[in-house]
Length: 296
Image (cartoon, rainbow, N blue to C red; front, side, top):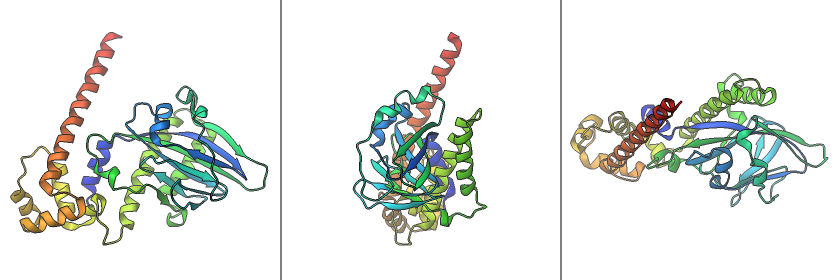
């Protein structure tokens, strides 16, 4: 897999995250989340795009997009909504309730995570850690457009000794104990969880799948993407890419377009432009930070 290109794009999205909810529920219960654009001002106001995820640490429940069939979630599962779509979690499929954004009021001023209890008095119960990841999707981000609307990481596919399983235990421990620095630990864990989820998704793609992420697995397209991302400012020509990749001009254009959705030179132009804009924004942030330090 073209890990260099993927790492480059992951750096570009500037992931930031924190766990905000420590949710204890008892049957029957339902919790509905609006789109990421609606809750972003409450949880990550500086983020351009917000991804929500849920870790089922105890019990079982149902979760999914509002316009799709729900999936059963078991202890140890992680469900991610990369596009920030409205979604619902519940004790039984088909349950709905209006989202309540008032519970997020002042979330950034409170010690995290926020504890909530929900539901009735039936025997069934569950514990869910809910988190948010902020990222920069501007001006061109091929990763987010390639991800599904729902990403389900099943506990059954995670070895007990694997670090993703360890993430779940660490996230629950940090959420329960509120130790100093816990929010920063959870933020870094959240970023690693998302990256691992993306890698697992890439590995699960069928051979006939197209898209940017599928292109990373292709020997020739992945090589071309790595070259472009390694040196986006280089004055690449199609002939230079062809020589490096080992395909004819027509074959590379056809193969690259099939996976990525556009010819390699067009992709290069968009990524190089986006890269320049990111460097300009970074320079402006550094200038503002130096100005603020000078004012102190």
